[in-house]
Length: 136
Image (cartoon, rainbow, N blue to C red; front, side, top):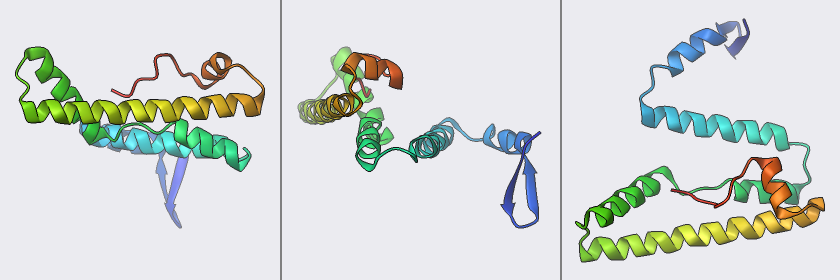
């Protein structure tokens, strides 16, 4: 089994780390998973030209978890018809924010596809991105 050196002369089995991670609550685990995903993306893209790296970073950005949870809550309240006028304004603003992120993401996908000389759909398949480009 693989070991990880945390400090000089302190090595931990990978299974021990996984056992520790298994103790995290859902929110902590999601945060940990996101950080691991970022680390993996950096490792995989360390050989990329700087512009491609920037574009991939932008493509992989999403709505912050707190915003996403609030957005889903407001959508649920709208569905339940319990949304206040203030909440409706907040939901509209959040929807606009999500749409702007989606537009930026699509612009970056188009630019990256041009740099790589492939169609956007091909690039999305290569990156494992499915349409529609949703954040919530």
